[in-house]
Length: 211
Image (tube, rainbow, N blue to C red; front, side, top):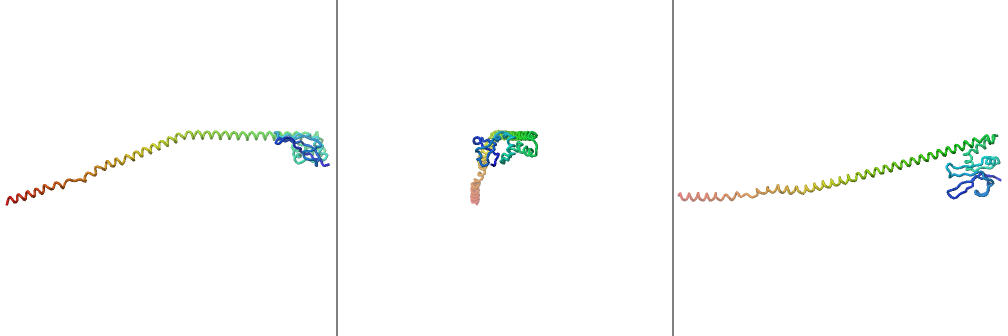
């Protein structure tokens, strides 16, 4: 009978965790199993990998083949390295430090990830606050500019009104100045020539009388 060490899914949707089990390779994934070696909870921070190391190494010694996922999990907690060292003749007790160091690495990596998340969150929050301040400053500047623009428009309209009033007054003054220019048209001079004729007549009369 071919034996596999694999994961068995449990939990509700979006709340899944996994048992690490030894089962017949022909059995369904979530069906019957021979022995449970531990569990894996990826939803925790850091993810929890709880394995009975001696049991797992015992099954590896019996020829049980771990799935790719289980092999990766065993490597993370140092089980695979311990197993390889035991095949060289070293005892399990001599190799306990391997798992301890592996666990410390997991915790350190998780702490680093948390710190990065916090820094990223803090950076986003700072950027959001900066954008909010800039938006508030822009609104204040727009509010300050609005009265100035209104005053400028009113001043422009007043100037335009004054200019139009001046333009209406100027033609009247021009007409008043041009009116006296029409007076020289009437000249009464020719009417004064009549006495000259009368004088000529008188001279003629005087000539006749002398004769």
